[in-house]
Amino acid sequence: MINRSILYKYVCLISSLLTFYFLFSCTHDLANSYQISTNNISSPLSVLKNPLQKEAKSTSQKDSTRHLKLLFTGDIMGHTPQIRAAEIKKNKSYDYKPSFEYIAPIIRAADIAIGNLEVTLPGRPPYTGYPTFKSPDDLAVDLKWAGFDVLVTANNHSNDSGKKGVLHTIETLKNLGFQQTGTFKNKAERDLFYPLILNKNGIKIALLNYTYGTNDIPTTPPTIVNTINWYTIKKDLQKAKKRNPDCIIVMVHWGDEYQLIENKEQRKLADWLANQGVHVVVGAHPHVVQPIIEKEVKTEENKQVHQSLIAYSLGNFVSNQDKKNTDGGILLEIDIAKNIQQDSTYINDAHFIPVWRYIQKTNQNDIYRILPVAAVEHSKRPFIKLPTEDKMEMLDFLRVTRARLKHNGAKERRITTKDIITSTKMAQK
Image 1 (cartoon, helix red, strand yellow):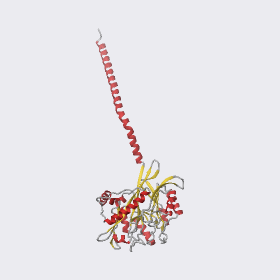
Image 2 (cartoon, helix red, strand yellow; image 1 turned 135 degrees about the vertical axis):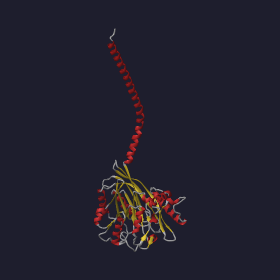
Image 3 (cartoon, helix red, strand yellow; image 1 turned 90 degrees about the vertical axis):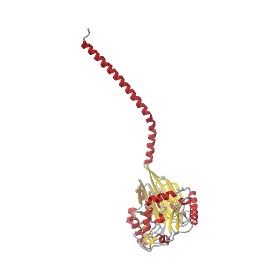
Image 4 (spheres, helix red, strand yellow; image 1 turned 180 degrees about the horizontal axis):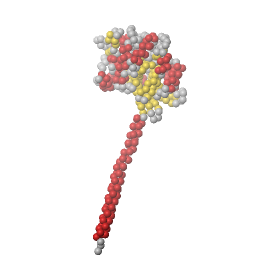
């Protein structure tokens, strides 16, 4: 007869073995189940992995490219009728905002808006137009309101108010928050602040400005007006390059007035500037629009190939001139792009925007308005209604300007009524 205690031990042992076997089987099955489940999940993840990588790569490329939207305008003039039109209280207060009301939304949209100020700001009356341009400080106040960031002041009218005018113009612009270059209080100021360096959106710009002359009005020391001298310009460019700018821009007051084609001197200087490594050349003074060209050139210094854009003349931004083709001009938009990974900067895109000066007749003062032409051209509900004769003149200017610029391959950005009205309402709020 089997001892009960021994039997009990055998039963316990067998029970333990069965329990261990059962647990091992379940664990193995669960492990297999988990492995299958993991395999089923990893398959779709592996399918999604490439698109995610592509998206990350695309985002990385996008993030590695920075953009800077530059905008240039033509000659900002101040003829006597313009001064009278802006007059609120003679010799005391002036309002130029109506002139810029419909163009301000475009100017403000730029990262940096640059204008050619072809008047002096003497700071006191008498305020006069041609032949010596002396405008009230209120003009600068309202240019700032319109969205301008930089004003260049080297032109043939820089000395129209003498030494005091040069000084007051510089002081007024800087006190209003403008960046300004082209004229200087003295050599020390020029040495310290020239070329003008502009930094925005991680892109560094070197801006230079020169004029062919000052209408035989001598520059009184210690003030300085930059004039075109190739030796001086080359030294200035060398100084600019030491600051390691991403883009070098030169604005030049040059050429023959009222001529639709640039002259030999303009072409020669423009080509030389491009060969020196200048990326953008913007011209003023002819008071009419001249061609825009883009070219690839080898720099004189290291034979590297780079893009250069040359706009020989942007025409008038605002004036009272009435000779054919002087009643308008263009804005020039340039998108500068910088690839951070490759450490390369290039002109990504460039467009022109035609603008036209409309003299609106009222019961009181006339209003000089700068209109983005495309927004008025075909609009069924224009933001401003022009008399038939004025509209015909505007369309004639537009037809001629478009044809000449597009002949050389320049592209237009067409502004719509919606662009102006929406932006104007937002600005008013």
